[in-house]
Length: 212
Ligand SMILES: [Fe+2]
Image 1 (cartoon, protein in one colour):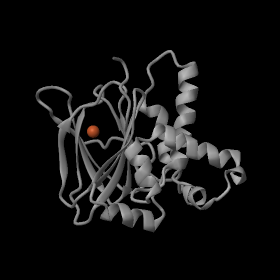
Image 2 (cartoon, helix red, strand yellow):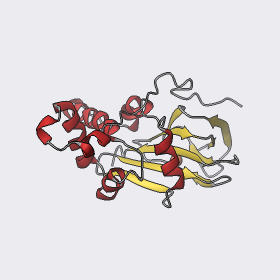
Image 3 (cartoon, helix red, strand yellow):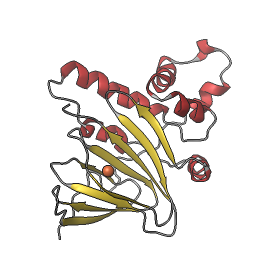
Image 4 (tube, helix red, strand yellow):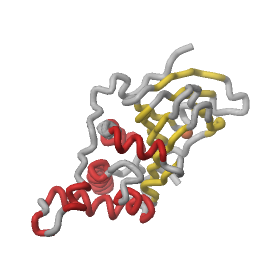
């Protein structure tokens, strides 16, 4: 059985998100902000759901300010040049650079009562942060033509891929670790996802609708 290659199996591109919003919160004078920093704050406020933005300010979920800025740049570039619908693959490089290296942020989300946090939901993309309890799994499902990119941020995740038909024959079984990122849409098959381990896992998933 062949393993489906992951886009970033060696975690070589993963770097920590910049912990900038702490600076924003402690800054008394808005004039002291650099353009870049205020831009990140504005982008996260514009892209994140109201709930996610407020939770980020309360430090209940990880800081995703820098990721939001990168996603905004991708949207801007792709919207101005693309003749095809935006694919989740276009956001893979930005997602590959996001990580949960800050242990306090990780611990906070591991203890958060909400296991699933929708970060972004608009007509272009949906971004979700998910904590998987030990033994938790999600049934076989497909994804729209825009596809799904997901990345393991903590723990390990097992994904099984199947033919996208009624028979749903097993095609591959892959185990992913922090930093690993992969992509799937219905032209590649269906999949199920599970945390078979004895510890929690955290993943981030990005979807785009593709052709309507
Ligand atoms: Fe999925």
